[in-house]
Image (tube, rainbow, N blue to C red):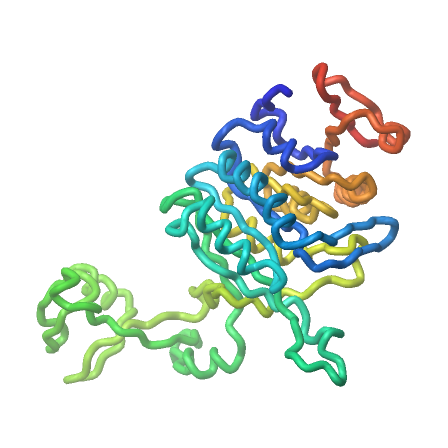
Length: 353
């Protein structure tokens, strides 16, 4: 099996096990991996002809299956890259321990709690447990130097009225007042000097403070500690935290049993990759990652073992105008809807029309 060259890794879906796809890639090739593996639910999922069997003999069988795949993901991930491992209560604690050993405990960044819905049928009348309404997403980085683009959510009206309660008379701009003193004082290297009659350790140098004063960005009264003005219309919003309650499934567009919402993948891809970088979705399913990457200018490669899921993914991407190539061993069910383009002796690229 030949190793893929970088030019081949763009808008490509492999109709095969992700273990095989990962082995096609060179070391340190991928900037971001979003892995949405089976959750060890013991269920058979079916929707619109797409079936997904998540039944396992026991936990040992599952971990023996997932471990070599995680090892490959580690190998192909760049040192500046990140991997998001999507799971839920069935398997999250096992995956955390396993992933700590593979990616390094020091490279564990976050556990995201995604509130996927407000209620669940497993907590109906008579149930003796709390409703299970969240998934977990474990984040590991390739090193301590990784891509990070902070994401924000809009402030709610209650917060705006409370924090940004001041309004500038001349401009009508709403603003909040913030501390200008240096946190940590001398131990953090903050400068001490007298400013507007107040001697303190300050956050900024004297020249910077004078600049802010000249720009009208400092509010002060005689004998009080000066404060900085932070205008609402200059703020990005509230930094995203590790509990996500603002992204809900789009049931009207859902056609694959475990399809994830575009908002979820959009936040992940936007945070942990830059434009033109390569995102790998090893359990591609309905290829939501490909849809997002096409929208915001990332390269995408995916693996999906289900023929039916691959068909759906191609149909979905064609609607958006994205040219998705499908790599697979010759299969009648796919060839009947495709035009084959020879790539090499071991595989062929199939560009669906």
